[in-house]
Length: 340
Ligand code: SF4
Image (cartoon, rainbow, N blue to C red; front, side, top):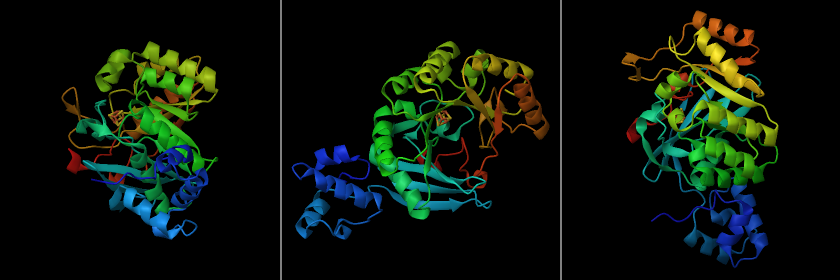
């Protein structure tokens, strides 16, 4: 039986876990964990007897990196991390300005079944707890101490694991007030409302893919229980509360969702919201079919036309050239085959 890990707990939870120790001990231990201490014995401002007792009751990390893959472009490193019952993946990304971002997973697998995503094909195994989420960041930080930003765009639907997400975000925010955190959802309206009301005040990204309702239902089954009108209401509510621009993610699937009709529907959906559209050319995954045909990347001309059609309707767009394709670490490609 694994000992409980102290890594995913903010100071207030550590105080409870370590009671009846005085509260200042929780702060000291949190500082050591945040500094990357790999053993209780290194915590030299704690009495030796306490270090021994902690070592008997707890561990500092309950997950371990079993593989790492570096993209040839140098823009991404994917870590495969062993957890109880399977393997999760986390990715360190670097942008053109050299800033590093950690892309973290919140579930082992995913129940949402988006047809263009490898994780969706795995099915859902379980939610990750706060330690399993936080430790992904610590593993990446071991490699890149300057990593600051976090996106929850890895395996799983973060808003179906709100308690793990909330606890991990409060732990990670305690280690730096400067952290920029973005949570990406496939459009769980109840979760968006809950974020709006109860926080945390993270940036929001929504995987929209298309604003044509019938097509979206086929591509993203979540849309049946979370139709576009209720999704839009939830986004308006979130924006009213948090006054932050929302990212609409549009995975462009060759010949499927890049028509003028798609552009018009997306512009209609965005009306009244402050958004930027992240256009993501689909990252190939073998054996993914849509209506009996293999999914394909959009051609350069198709992408250019679609982007122009969005911009002509007043939408600001960013074309995301995906990092990590060479290591199956780009958007929609995560999911160790051992899990399937
Ligand atoms: S895109 Fe996100 S929500 Fe959809 S199946 Fe993949 S991991 Fe799940």
